[in-house]
Length: 298
Image (tube, rainbow, N blue to C red):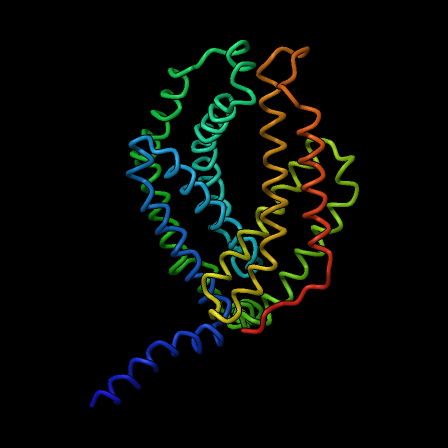
């Protein structure tokens, strides 16, 4: 009797691996999208209460959802998505203003910049509170609730899932494993092309590269959530340089934004050295994207 229960328990653990291994693209996207929507809802109350980390995690969930839609395009491209995309952009920007204020405040408090920032800008608690009140109002609004309801309906039974033409059916029922191998290699190759001359790029080009890297990183994370455990170490190996590249480019953007809050003649302490170090870190991470991609089999 004990042996039977143990065998049953082992089969119940193993079953999800087989299900994931044979998962089609439509099912995979739905699993990922549901998790993103669930995380958005889970962080709502604490974000309204003014929790900075909850706000950040809510933004990450939105970014992961948008990255997943892009990763599974053109399967997910339909007449309903453009309006949903616009509303998600509204929500992301609303949270982004408060997140940017949090990041700048944290930088200004850093021991390296504390004295410089104190001489340049006064703490603007009223502005910070105003941004968080805007966030709270937005998350309590009917607009937010309509958006969440519309996204849930779209994931479960949107036009992308109900089209009956042959091409749409082929995209939805295609093997996740085959699709991921092709799509990840395409995105990686594009990042390598766009990253040439990274050290000499202007701010706008670096910002566009950072957005593409972030999308690639979040796609890897989404796939990692649904692939078998045995495949995850290889995905983490692919994920590491993307994360480091995004982080270096993001820190560089924050450093340059910090500079703009001061007088043009007064750069933050160690600005030039820090910029060189961040560019070097970004370039090193970009080089790590270049070796041949060894995609996991799952």
